[in-house]
Amino acid sequence: MGISEVLELILGLCLFLFGMNVMGESLERSAGNGLRSLLGRLTSNKFAGFLTGLGVTAVIQSSSATTVMVVGFVNSGIMTLRQAISVIMGANIGTTVTAWILSLGGIDGGAWYIAMWKPSNFTPILALIGIAMCMLSKSSKKKDIGTILLGFATLMFGMDTMSAAVSGLKDIPEFQQLFLLFKNPILGVLVGAILTGIIQSSSASVGILQALAASTDSVSYGAAIPIIMGQNIGTCVTALISSIGTNKNARRAALVHLSFNIIGTIICLTGFTIVSNVFTVPLFDQSASAFGIAIAHSIFNVICTAILLPMSGLLEKLAIRLVPDNDKKDVNAELDERLLVTPAIALDRCNTLTLEMAENAVGALKQSIASLKSCDVKAATEIRESEEKVDHLEDILGTYLVKLSGQKISENESAEITKLLKLIGDFERISDHSVNILESAEELRDKEISFTEEAGKDMTQLTAAISEILDLASNAFINNDIAAARQVEPLEQVVDKLILKLHDGHIKRLKSGDCSIESGFILNDLTTNFERVADHCSNIAIRVIDASENNMNIHESLRDIKQNDPRFEEQYALYKQKYLA
Image (cartoon, rainbow, N blue to C red; front, side):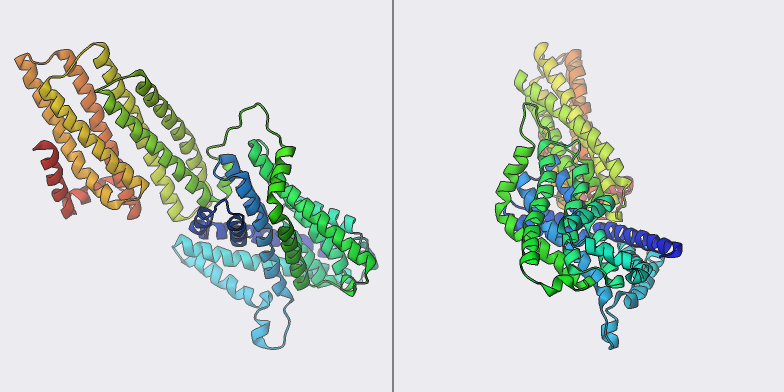
Protein backbone atom coordinates (compact mmCIF):
# COMPACT_ATOMS: atom_id res chain seq x y z
CA MET A 1 0.00 0.00 0.00
CA GLY A 2 1.76 3.14 -1.24
CA ILE A 3 1.56 6.75 -0.11
CA SER A 4 -1.15 7.52 -2.67
CA GLU A 5 -3.40 4.77 -1.30
CA VAL A 6 -2.79 5.99 2.27
CA LEU A 7 -3.75 9.54 1.29
CA GLU A 8 -6.78 8.21 -0.56
CA LEU A 9 -7.80 6.28 2.57
CA ILE A 10 -7.44 9.42 4.70
CA LEU A 11 -9.48 11.41 2.19
CA GLY A 12 -12.19 8.75 2.12
CA LEU A 13 -12.34 8.63 5.93
CA CYS A 14 -12.56 12.43 6.18
CA LEU A 15 -15.34 12.59 3.57
CA PHE A 16 -17.17 9.73 5.32
CA LEU A 17 -17.06 11.41 8.76
CA PHE A 18 -17.87 14.85 7.30
CA GLY A 19 -20.86 13.48 5.37
CA MET A 20 -22.15 11.69 8.47
CA ASN A 21 -21.80 14.84 10.57
CA VAL A 22 -23.49 17.11 8.00
CA MET A 23 -26.32 14.64 7.41
CA GLY A 24 -26.87 14.19 11.17
CA GLU A 25 -27.01 17.92 11.89
CA SER A 26 -29.42 18.56 9.01
CA LEU A 27 -31.63 15.66 10.09
CA GLU A 28 -31.80 17.18 13.59
CA ARG A 29 -32.88 20.55 12.21
CA SER A 30 -35.45 19.03 9.86
CA ALA A 31 -36.88 16.76 12.54
CA GLY A 32 -36.89 19.44 15.25
CA ASN A 33 -40.62 19.30 16.00
CA GLY A 34 -40.60 15.53 15.54
CA LEU A 35 -37.92 15.22 18.22
CA ARG A 36 -39.99 17.37 20.58
CA SER A 37 -43.01 15.18 19.89
CA LEU A 38 -41.08 11.95 20.48
CA LEU A 39 -39.67 13.19 23.76
CA GLY A 40 -43.06 14.58 24.76
CA ARG A 41 -44.46 11.03 24.66
CA LEU A 42 -41.79 9.81 27.07
CA THR A 43 -43.25 8.23 30.21
CA SER A 44 -41.94 6.10 33.05
CA ASN A 45 -42.97 3.06 30.99
CA LYS A 46 -39.85 1.13 29.94
CA PHE A 47 -41.18 0.29 26.49
CA ALA A 48 -42.14 3.91 25.74
CA GLY A 49 -38.67 5.09 26.75
CA PHE A 50 -37.07 2.35 24.67
CA LEU A 51 -39.07 3.36 21.57
CA THR A 52 -38.19 7.01 22.19
CA GLY A 53 -34.45 6.26 22.23
CA LEU A 54 -34.77 4.07 19.15
CA GLY A 55 -36.79 6.68 17.23
CA VAL A 56 -34.60 9.67 18.09
CA THR A 57 -31.38 7.81 17.25
CA ALA A 58 -32.79 6.51 13.98
CA VAL A 59 -33.65 10.11 13.07
CA ILE A 60 -30.37 11.78 14.01
CA GLN A 61 -28.16 8.76 13.11
CA SER A 62 -26.05 8.92 16.27
CA SER A 63 -26.43 7.01 19.54
CA SER A 64 -23.66 9.19 21.00
CA ALA A 65 -25.70 12.35 20.35
CA THR A 66 -28.81 10.74 21.87
CA THR A 67 -26.91 9.67 24.98
CA VAL A 68 -25.37 13.14 25.40
CA MET A 69 -28.91 14.55 25.15
CA VAL A 70 -30.06 12.08 27.81
CA VAL A 71 -27.22 13.14 30.13
CA GLY A 72 -28.34 16.75 29.60
CA PHE A 73 -31.98 15.88 30.32
CA VAL A 74 -31.09 14.09 33.54
CA ASN A 75 -28.76 16.92 34.56
CA SER A 76 -31.60 19.40 33.96
CA GLY A 77 -34.07 17.33 35.97
CA ILE A 78 -36.46 16.83 33.03
CA MET A 79 -35.79 13.09 32.87
CA THR A 80 -35.34 10.57 35.66
CA LEU A 81 -32.48 8.08 35.75
CA ARG A 82 -34.99 5.25 35.30
CA GLN A 83 -36.40 6.84 32.14
CA ALA A 84 -32.87 7.48 30.86
CA ILE A 85 -31.95 3.78 31.06
CA SER A 86 -34.73 2.74 28.67
CA VAL A 87 -33.88 5.56 26.24
CA ILE A 88 -30.20 4.55 26.21
CA MET A 89 -31.11 0.96 25.41
CA GLY A 90 -33.34 2.10 22.55
CA ALA A 91 -30.51 4.28 21.22
CA ASN A 92 -28.25 1.24 20.92
CA ILE A 93 -30.67 -0.38 18.49
CA GLY A 94 -31.47 2.87 16.68
CA THR A 95 -27.81 3.34 15.79
CA THR A 96 -27.83 0.12 13.72
CA VAL A 97 -29.83 1.92 11.01
CA THR A 98 -26.62 3.51 9.68
CA ALA A 99 -24.97 0.12 9.12
CA TRP A 100 -27.99 -1.04 7.12
CA ILE A 101 -27.82 2.08 4.94
CA LEU A 102 -24.09 1.57 4.35
CA SER A 103 -24.66 -2.09 3.49
CA LEU A 104 -26.51 -0.97 0.34
CA GLY A 105 -23.08 -0.56 -1.22
CA GLY A 106 -22.85 -4.35 -1.47
CA ILE A 107 -25.91 -4.70 -3.70
CA ASP A 108 -25.08 -6.39 -6.97
CA GLY A 109 -27.33 -7.53 -9.79
CA GLY A 110 -27.74 -7.48 -13.52
CA ALA A 111 -31.14 -5.83 -13.75
CA TRP A 112 -31.07 -2.03 -13.84
CA TYR A 113 -33.80 -1.70 -11.20
CA ILE A 114 -31.66 -3.75 -8.80
CA ALA A 115 -28.44 -1.96 -9.72
CA MET A 116 -30.09 1.42 -9.04
CA TRP A 117 -30.33 0.51 -5.35
CA LYS A 118 -26.52 0.53 -5.21
CA PRO A 119 -25.50 3.92 -3.69
CA SER A 120 -22.75 4.55 -6.25
CA ASN A 121 -25.50 4.60 -8.87
CA PHE A 122 -28.13 6.75 -7.18
CA THR A 123 -26.06 9.09 -4.94
CA PRO A 124 -24.94 11.29 -7.88
CA ILE A 125 -28.63 11.96 -8.56
CA LEU A 126 -29.21 12.74 -4.87
CA ALA A 127 -26.18 15.04 -4.88
CA LEU A 128 -27.51 16.90 -7.94
CA ILE A 129 -30.94 17.33 -6.32
CA GLY A 130 -29.31 18.35 -3.05
CA ILE A 131 -27.05 21.03 -4.53
CA ALA A 132 -29.98 22.41 -6.57
CA MET A 133 -32.13 22.68 -3.40
CA CYS A 134 -29.31 24.33 -1.45
CA MET A 135 -28.44 26.88 -4.15
CA LEU A 136 -31.85 27.66 -5.63
CA SER A 137 -34.32 27.32 -2.77
CA LYS A 138 -35.03 30.18 -0.34
CA SER A 139 -36.80 27.92 2.16
CA SER A 140 -34.58 26.83 5.06
CA LYS A 141 -36.53 23.57 5.29
CA LYS A 142 -35.79 22.73 1.65
CA LYS A 143 -32.15 23.74 2.14
CA ASP A 144 -31.93 21.34 5.09
CA ILE A 145 -33.35 18.53 2.94
CA GLY A 146 -30.81 19.42 0.25
CA THR A 147 -28.01 19.30 2.84
CA ILE A 148 -29.22 15.88 4.03
CA LEU A 149 -28.98 14.58 0.45
CA LEU A 150 -25.52 16.13 -0.02
CA GLY A 151 -24.36 14.74 3.34
CA PHE A 152 -25.56 11.26 2.39
CA ALA A 153 -23.90 11.46 -1.03
CA THR A 154 -20.63 12.62 0.58
CA LEU A 155 -20.83 9.84 3.16
CA MET A 156 -21.31 7.15 0.51
CA PHE A 157 -18.59 8.65 -1.71
CA GLY A 158 -16.23 8.57 1.26
CA MET A 159 -17.19 4.94 1.85
CA ASP A 160 -16.42 4.05 -1.79
CA THR A 161 -13.14 5.99 -1.62
CA MET A 162 -12.06 4.08 1.50
CA SER A 163 -13.03 0.78 -0.12
CA ALA A 164 -11.01 1.57 -3.24
CA ALA A 165 -8.00 2.67 -1.16
CA VAL A 166 -7.85 -0.54 0.88
CA SER A 167 -8.78 -2.95 -1.92
CA GLY A 168 -5.10 -3.61 -2.66
CA LEU A 169 -4.54 -4.89 0.90
CA LYS A 170 -6.29 -8.19 0.10
CA ASP A 171 -3.15 -9.37 -1.74
CA ILE A 172 -0.78 -8.55 1.13
CA PRO A 173 -0.19 -11.60 3.38
CA GLU A 174 0.73 -9.46 6.41
CA PHE A 175 -2.68 -7.74 6.29
CA GLN A 176 -4.43 -11.09 6.18
CA GLN A 177 -2.37 -12.25 9.17
CA LEU A 178 -3.36 -9.10 11.05
CA PHE A 179 -7.03 -10.01 10.84
CA LEU A 180 -6.25 -13.54 11.92
CA LEU A 181 -5.02 -11.98 15.17
CA PHE A 182 -8.41 -10.34 15.64
CA LYS A 183 -9.95 -13.79 15.87
CA ASN A 184 -8.80 -13.56 19.47
CA PRO A 185 -12.11 -12.21 20.84
CA ILE A 186 -10.57 -10.08 23.59
CA LEU A 187 -8.15 -8.44 21.15
CA GLY A 188 -11.02 -7.81 18.72
CA VAL A 189 -13.09 -6.16 21.45
CA LEU A 190 -10.14 -3.93 22.43
CA VAL A 191 -9.52 -2.86 18.83
CA GLY A 192 -13.20 -2.03 18.30
CA ALA A 193 -13.41 -0.08 21.57
CA ILE A 194 -10.21 1.93 20.93
CA LEU A 195 -11.09 2.80 17.32
CA THR A 196 -14.61 3.89 18.26
CA GLY A 197 -13.36 5.78 21.31
CA ILE A 198 -11.00 7.79 19.09
CA ILE A 199 -13.54 8.77 16.44
CA GLN A 200 -16.43 8.84 18.99
CA SER A 201 -18.95 7.22 16.67
CA SER A 202 -19.91 3.55 16.55
CA SER A 203 -21.75 4.18 13.27
CA ALA A 204 -18.55 5.51 11.69
CA SER A 205 -16.37 2.67 13.03
CA VAL A 206 -18.89 0.06 11.80
CA GLY A 207 -18.79 1.82 8.41
CA ILE A 208 -14.98 1.56 8.33
CA LEU A 209 -15.22 -2.15 9.18
CA GLN A 210 -17.78 -2.62 6.39
CA ALA A 211 -15.47 -0.86 3.92
CA LEU A 212 -12.55 -3.13 4.87
CA ALA A 213 -14.72 -6.23 4.67
CA ALA A 214 -16.21 -5.36 1.30
CA SER A 215 -12.87 -4.49 -0.32
CA THR A 216 -10.35 -6.97 1.05
CA ASP A 217 -12.26 -10.21 1.80
CA SER A 218 -9.80 -10.54 4.71
CA VAL A 219 -12.27 -9.78 7.51
CA SER A 220 -13.95 -12.96 8.67
CA TYR A 221 -17.11 -13.04 10.77
CA GLY A 222 -15.01 -14.55 13.56
CA ALA A 223 -12.92 -11.36 13.62
CA ALA A 224 -15.71 -8.88 12.84
CA ILE A 225 -18.15 -9.92 15.59
CA PRO A 226 -15.80 -9.19 18.56
CA ILE A 227 -14.81 -5.87 16.93
CA ILE A 228 -18.51 -4.95 16.68
CA MET A 229 -18.91 -5.77 20.38
CA GLY A 230 -15.98 -3.52 21.25
CA GLN A 231 -17.41 -0.69 19.18
CA ASN A 232 -20.41 -0.52 21.50
CA ILE A 233 -18.07 0.04 24.44
CA GLY A 234 -16.00 2.67 22.63
CA THR A 235 -19.05 4.76 21.80
CA CYS A 236 -19.59 5.37 25.55
CA VAL A 237 -16.60 7.74 25.61
CA THR A 238 -18.68 10.67 24.32
CA ALA A 239 -21.30 10.36 27.06
CA LEU A 240 -18.66 9.88 29.77
CA ILE A 241 -16.85 13.05 28.67
CA SER A 242 -20.12 15.00 28.54
CA SER A 243 -21.02 13.90 32.09
CA ILE A 244 -18.02 15.71 33.58
CA GLY A 245 -19.25 18.50 35.86
CA THR A 246 -22.85 17.26 35.96
CA ASN A 247 -24.95 16.22 38.94
CA LYS A 248 -24.99 12.68 40.36
CA ASN A 249 -27.91 11.37 38.32
CA ALA A 250 -26.41 12.63 35.05
CA ARG A 251 -23.13 10.87 35.85
CA ARG A 252 -25.11 7.76 36.70
CA ALA A 253 -26.86 7.93 33.31
CA ALA A 254 -23.46 7.97 31.55
CA LEU A 255 -22.30 5.03 33.68
CA VAL A 256 -25.51 3.12 32.88
CA HIS A 257 -24.62 3.51 29.18
CA LEU A 258 -21.12 2.15 29.84
CA SER A 259 -22.20 -0.67 32.17
CA PHE A 260 -25.02 -1.71 29.81
CA ASN A 261 -22.57 -2.08 26.92
CA ILE A 262 -19.85 -3.76 29.02
CA ILE A 263 -22.27 -6.28 30.58
CA GLY A 264 -23.90 -6.96 27.20
CA THR A 265 -20.48 -7.46 25.61
CA ILE A 266 -19.35 -9.81 28.39
CA ILE A 267 -22.49 -11.93 28.03
CA CYS A 268 -22.35 -12.09 24.23
CA LEU A 269 -18.57 -12.51 24.12
CA THR A 270 -18.81 -15.42 26.58
CA GLY A 271 -21.44 -17.08 24.41
CA PHE A 272 -19.44 -16.38 21.23
CA THR A 273 -16.24 -17.85 22.76
CA ILE A 274 -17.99 -20.99 24.00
CA VAL A 275 -19.67 -21.58 20.64
CA SER A 276 -16.49 -20.97 18.60
CA ASN A 277 -14.39 -23.27 20.83
CA VAL A 278 -16.87 -26.10 21.37
CA PHE A 279 -18.47 -26.20 17.93
CA THR A 280 -17.14 -25.85 14.42
CA VAL A 281 -19.02 -22.92 12.92
CA PRO A 282 -18.09 -22.48 9.22
CA LEU A 283 -19.67 -19.00 9.21
CA PHE A 284 -16.97 -17.65 11.55
CA ASP A 285 -14.26 -18.46 8.95
CA GLN A 286 -16.16 -16.94 6.02
CA SER A 287 -15.31 -13.47 4.70
CA ALA A 288 -17.73 -10.92 6.12
CA SER A 289 -19.79 -8.71 3.84
CA ALA A 290 -21.11 -5.21 4.55
CA PHE A 291 -24.62 -6.69 4.70
CA GLY A 292 -23.50 -9.44 7.08
CA ILE A 293 -21.82 -6.92 9.38
CA ALA A 294 -25.06 -4.89 9.50
CA ILE A 295 -26.96 -8.05 10.49
CA ALA A 296 -24.37 -8.96 13.17
CA HIS A 297 -24.45 -5.38 14.53
CA SER A 298 -28.25 -5.45 14.82
CA ILE A 299 -28.41 -8.98 16.32
CA PHE A 300 -25.81 -8.10 18.97
CA ASN A 301 -27.66 -4.95 20.06
CA VAL A 302 -31.07 -6.65 20.05
CA ILE A 303 -29.74 -9.52 22.20
CA CYS A 304 -28.15 -7.11 24.70
CA THR A 305 -31.36 -5.11 24.98
CA ALA A 306 -33.58 -8.20 25.26
CA ILE A 307 -31.43 -9.49 28.13
CA LEU A 308 -30.91 -6.23 30.01
CA LEU A 309 -34.12 -4.22 29.46
CA PRO A 310 -36.01 -6.33 32.04
CA MET A 311 -33.03 -5.83 34.38
CA SER A 312 -32.97 -2.02 34.09
CA GLY A 313 -33.71 -1.73 37.82
CA LEU A 314 -30.48 -3.60 38.59
CA LEU A 315 -28.53 -1.28 36.25
CA GLU A 316 -30.02 1.67 38.13
CA LYS A 317 -28.89 0.19 41.49
CA LEU A 318 -25.42 -0.48 40.07
CA ALA A 319 -25.11 3.14 38.89
CA ILE A 320 -26.22 4.42 42.30
CA ARG A 321 -23.64 2.19 43.97
CA LEU A 322 -20.91 3.44 41.62
CA VAL A 323 -21.93 7.09 42.18
CA PRO A 324 -23.26 7.05 45.76
CA ASP A 325 -25.26 9.78 47.45
CA ASN A 326 -23.38 12.12 49.76
CA ASP A 327 -24.15 15.05 52.05
CA LYS A 328 -23.53 17.59 49.31
CA LYS A 329 -26.76 18.98 47.87
CA ASP A 330 -27.27 18.00 44.24
CA VAL A 331 -28.77 20.74 42.05
CA ASN A 332 -30.28 20.21 38.61
CA ALA A 333 -28.93 22.42 35.84
CA GLU A 334 -31.81 24.57 34.66
CA LEU A 335 -30.33 24.96 31.18
CA ASP A 336 -27.73 22.38 30.19
CA GLU A 337 -25.35 23.34 27.39
CA ARG A 338 -25.26 19.69 26.28
CA LEU A 339 -28.74 20.28 24.87
CA LEU A 340 -27.37 22.88 22.43
CA VAL A 341 -26.34 20.03 20.11
CA THR A 342 -30.07 19.50 19.49
CA PRO A 343 -31.48 23.04 19.13
CA ALA A 344 -35.11 21.86 18.95
CA ILE A 345 -34.85 20.23 22.38
CA ALA A 346 -32.86 23.15 23.84
CA LEU A 347 -35.52 25.57 22.58
CA ASP A 348 -38.26 23.44 24.10
CA ARG A 349 -36.45 23.64 27.45
CA CYS A 350 -36.19 27.44 27.10
CA ASN A 351 -39.93 27.58 26.46
CA THR A 352 -40.57 25.58 29.63
CA LEU A 353 -38.47 27.94 31.75
CA THR A 354 -40.07 31.00 30.14
CA LEU A 355 -43.48 29.58 31.10
CA GLU A 356 -42.19 29.21 34.66
CA MET A 357 -40.91 32.78 34.50
CA ALA A 358 -44.31 34.01 33.29
CA GLU A 359 -46.17 32.21 36.08
CA ASN A 360 -43.86 33.68 38.72
CA ALA A 361 -44.08 37.21 37.33
CA VAL A 362 -47.89 37.19 37.00
CA GLY A 363 -48.30 35.52 40.39
CA ALA A 364 -46.07 38.12 42.07
CA LEU A 365 -47.97 41.01 40.45
CA LYS A 366 -51.31 39.62 41.63
CA GLN A 367 -49.93 39.15 45.14
CA SER A 368 -48.73 42.75 45.16
CA ILE A 369 -52.24 43.92 44.17
CA ALA A 370 -53.67 41.91 47.07
CA SER A 371 -51.09 43.53 49.40
CA LEU A 372 -52.77 46.92 48.83
CA LYS A 373 -55.64 45.67 50.99
CA SER A 374 -53.69 43.45 53.38
CA CYS A 375 -49.92 43.76 53.50
CA ASP A 376 -48.23 41.08 55.63
CA VAL A 377 -44.61 39.95 55.97
CA LYS A 378 -45.18 36.47 54.48
CA ALA A 379 -46.72 37.83 51.25
CA ALA A 380 -43.99 40.48 50.95
CA THR A 381 -41.30 37.78 51.27
CA GLU A 382 -42.96 35.62 48.60
CA ILE A 383 -43.24 38.56 46.18
CA ARG A 384 -39.57 39.43 46.57
CA GLU A 385 -38.51 35.79 46.22
CA SER A 386 -40.56 35.48 43.02
CA GLU A 387 -38.96 38.66 41.67
CA GLU A 388 -35.48 37.30 42.40
CA LYS A 389 -36.34 34.02 40.70
CA VAL A 390 -37.63 35.85 37.62
CA ASP A 391 -34.43 37.96 37.51
CA HIS A 392 -32.36 34.77 37.70
CA LEU A 393 -34.36 33.09 34.93
CA GLU A 394 -34.00 36.16 32.70
CA ASP A 395 -30.22 36.11 33.18
CA ILE A 396 -29.74 32.43 32.34
CA LEU A 397 -32.34 32.40 29.55
CA GLY A 398 -30.91 35.48 27.87
CA THR A 399 -27.39 34.03 27.87
CA TYR A 400 -28.55 30.59 26.75
CA LEU A 401 -30.81 31.87 23.96
CA VAL A 402 -27.95 33.94 22.53
CA LYS A 403 -25.75 30.81 22.50
CA LEU A 404 -28.59 28.84 20.93
CA SER A 405 -29.00 31.44 18.18
CA GLY A 406 -25.36 30.75 17.20
CA GLN A 407 -26.16 27.09 16.44
CA LYS A 408 -27.33 25.80 13.08
CA ILE A 409 -31.06 26.38 13.42
CA SER A 410 -34.09 26.68 11.17
CA GLU A 411 -35.91 29.93 10.38
CA ASN A 412 -38.80 28.94 12.66
CA GLU A 413 -36.42 28.24 15.54
CA SER A 414 -34.67 31.57 14.95
CA ALA A 415 -38.05 33.38 15.08
CA GLU A 416 -38.95 31.51 18.29
CA ILE A 417 -35.64 32.52 19.90
CA THR A 418 -36.26 36.17 18.96
CA LYS A 419 -39.75 35.99 20.47
CA LEU A 420 -38.48 34.49 23.73
CA LEU A 421 -35.65 37.02 24.05
CA LYS A 422 -38.22 39.82 23.88
CA LEU A 423 -40.77 38.13 26.13
CA ILE A 424 -38.38 37.44 28.99
CA GLY A 425 -37.69 41.19 29.19
CA ASP A 426 -41.41 41.92 29.52
CA PHE A 427 -41.93 39.29 32.23
CA GLU A 428 -38.88 40.52 34.13
CA ARG A 429 -40.21 44.10 34.11
CA ILE A 430 -43.65 42.90 35.32
CA SER A 431 -41.96 41.22 38.31
CA ASP A 432 -40.05 44.45 39.01
CA HIS A 433 -43.33 46.37 39.07
CA SER A 434 -44.73 43.84 41.56
CA VAL A 435 -42.00 44.87 44.03
CA ASN A 436 -42.66 48.57 43.32
CA ILE A 437 -46.37 48.09 44.05
CA LEU A 438 -45.50 46.13 47.21
CA GLU A 439 -43.29 49.00 48.39
CA SER A 440 -46.20 51.42 47.86
CA ALA A 441 -48.45 49.08 49.88
CA GLU A 442 -45.84 48.95 52.67
CA GLU A 443 -45.63 52.74 52.64
CA LEU A 444 -49.42 53.01 52.97
CA ARG A 445 -49.30 50.58 55.89
CA ASP A 446 -46.29 52.07 57.69
CA LYS A 447 -47.49 55.67 57.35
CA GLU A 448 -51.11 54.70 58.05
CA ILE A 449 -52.29 56.45 54.89
CA SER A 450 -55.58 55.48 53.28
CA PHE A 451 -57.33 56.56 50.09
CA THR A 452 -60.74 58.19 50.10
CA GLU A 453 -63.76 56.02 49.41
CA GLU A 454 -64.05 57.34 45.85
CA ALA A 455 -60.34 56.80 45.17
CA GLY A 456 -60.60 53.31 46.67
CA LYS A 457 -63.44 52.40 44.28
CA ASP A 458 -61.48 53.71 41.29
CA MET A 459 -58.40 51.77 42.44
CA THR A 460 -60.47 48.59 42.80
CA GLN A 461 -61.69 48.97 39.20
CA LEU A 462 -58.15 49.58 37.98
CA THR A 463 -56.66 46.57 39.80
CA ALA A 464 -59.49 44.35 38.50
CA ALA A 465 -58.68 45.46 34.94
CA ILE A 466 -54.95 44.86 35.56
CA SER A 467 -55.68 41.34 36.88
CA GLU A 468 -57.73 40.59 33.78
CA ILE A 469 -55.14 41.92 31.35
CA LEU A 470 -52.47 39.84 33.13
CA ASP A 471 -54.63 36.73 32.71
CA LEU A 472 -55.21 37.46 29.03
CA ALA A 473 -51.52 38.09 28.29
CA SER A 474 -50.27 35.05 30.22
CA ASN A 475 -52.95 32.83 28.66
CA ALA A 476 -52.01 34.13 25.21
CA PHE A 477 -48.38 33.11 25.77
CA ILE A 478 -48.85 29.89 27.76
CA ASN A 479 -51.55 28.44 25.48
CA ASN A 480 -50.63 30.35 22.31
CA ASP A 481 -54.20 31.71 22.43
CA ILE A 482 -54.46 34.27 19.62
CA ALA A 483 -58.05 35.16 20.56
CA ALA A 484 -56.93 36.10 24.08
CA ALA A 485 -53.97 38.03 22.65
CA ARG A 486 -56.31 40.16 20.51
CA GLN A 487 -58.33 41.16 23.58
CA VAL A 488 -55.32 42.66 25.37
CA GLU A 489 -54.92 45.87 23.37
CA PRO A 490 -58.58 47.01 23.75
CA LEU A 491 -58.31 46.42 27.51
CA GLU A 492 -54.97 48.27 27.63
CA GLN A 493 -56.73 51.32 26.15
CA VAL A 494 -59.38 51.10 28.89
CA VAL A 495 -56.62 50.84 31.55
CA ASP A 496 -55.22 54.13 30.25
CA LYS A 497 -58.68 55.69 30.64
CA LEU A 498 -59.02 54.33 34.19
CA ILE A 499 -55.66 55.83 35.16
CA LEU A 500 -56.65 59.18 33.67
CA LYS A 501 -59.92 59.01 35.64
CA LEU A 502 -57.98 58.35 38.86
CA HIS A 503 -55.64 61.28 38.27
CA ASP A 504 -58.51 63.66 37.44
CA GLY A 505 -60.42 62.55 40.52
CA HIS A 506 -57.38 63.01 42.74
CA ILE A 507 -56.82 66.55 41.51
CA LYS A 508 -60.45 67.40 42.30
CA ARG A 509 -60.20 65.86 45.76
CA LEU A 510 -56.90 67.61 46.38
CA LYS A 511 -58.47 70.97 45.56
CA SER A 512 -61.39 70.28 47.88
CA GLY A 513 -59.04 69.13 50.65
CA ASP A 514 -60.31 65.55 50.71
CA CYS A 515 -56.93 64.08 49.74
CA SER A 516 -53.39 64.77 50.94
CA ILE A 517 -50.34 65.45 48.78
CA GLU A 518 -48.57 62.46 50.35
CA SER A 519 -51.34 60.04 49.34
CA GLY A 520 -51.16 61.61 45.87
CA PHE A 521 -47.48 60.66 45.53
CA ILE A 522 -48.29 57.02 46.38
CA LEU A 523 -51.28 57.06 44.02
CA ASN A 524 -49.09 58.39 41.22
CA ASP A 525 -46.47 55.67 41.86
CA LEU A 526 -49.14 52.98 41.74
CA THR A 527 -50.80 54.21 38.56
CA THR A 528 -47.41 54.56 36.84
CA ASN A 529 -46.59 50.94 37.67
CA PHE A 530 -50.03 49.71 36.60
CA GLU A 531 -49.80 51.60 33.32
CA ARG A 532 -46.42 50.03 32.54
CA VAL A 533 -47.67 46.56 33.49
CA ALA A 534 -50.50 47.00 30.98
CA ASP A 535 -47.97 48.13 28.35
CA HIS A 536 -45.86 45.00 28.95
CA CYS A 537 -49.00 42.84 28.66
CA SER A 538 -49.68 44.56 25.33
CA ASN A 539 -46.12 43.77 24.20
CA ILE A 540 -46.53 40.09 25.17
CA ALA A 541 -49.82 39.78 23.28
CA ILE A 542 -48.45 41.46 20.16
CA ARG A 543 -45.38 39.21 20.16
CA VAL A 544 -47.63 36.14 20.33
CA ILE A 545 -49.70 37.46 17.40
CA ASP A 546 -46.57 38.38 15.44
CA ALA A 547 -45.06 34.92 15.96
CA SER A 548 -48.23 33.28 14.64
CA GLU A 549 -48.09 35.49 11.53
CA ASN A 550 -44.28 35.40 11.07
CA ASN A 551 -44.08 39.15 11.58
CA MET A 552 -41.74 40.85 14.04
CA ASN A 553 -42.79 44.48 13.55
CA ILE A 554 -44.64 45.31 16.77
CA HIS A 555 -45.63 48.86 15.69
CA GLU A 556 -47.10 47.62 12.43
CA SER A 557 -49.08 44.96 14.30
CA LEU A 558 -50.44 47.51 16.77
CA ARG A 559 -51.61 49.77 13.94
CA ASP A 560 -53.19 46.81 12.18
CA ILE A 561 -55.12 45.76 15.30
CA LYS A 562 -56.40 49.26 16.02
CA GLN A 563 -57.26 50.22 12.44
CA ASN A 564 -58.11 47.01 10.58
CA ASP A 565 -59.40 44.57 13.19
CA PRO A 566 -63.21 44.95 13.47
CA ARG A 567 -63.12 43.14 16.82
CA PHE A 568 -61.03 45.89 18.39
CA GLU A 569 -63.85 48.43 18.70
CA GLU A 570 -66.25 45.73 19.84
CA GLN A 571 -63.89 44.55 22.61
CA TYR A 572 -63.02 48.10 23.58
CA ALA A 573 -66.72 48.93 24.01
CA LEU A 574 -67.25 45.85 26.17
CA TYR A 575 -64.32 46.64 28.46
CA LYS A 576 -65.32 50.29 28.63
CA GLN A 577 -68.80 49.24 29.71
CA LYS A 578 -67.34 46.84 32.27
CA TYR A 579 -64.85 49.18 33.96
CA LEU A 580 -65.83 52.76 33.11
CA ALA A 581 -69.63 52.71 33.18
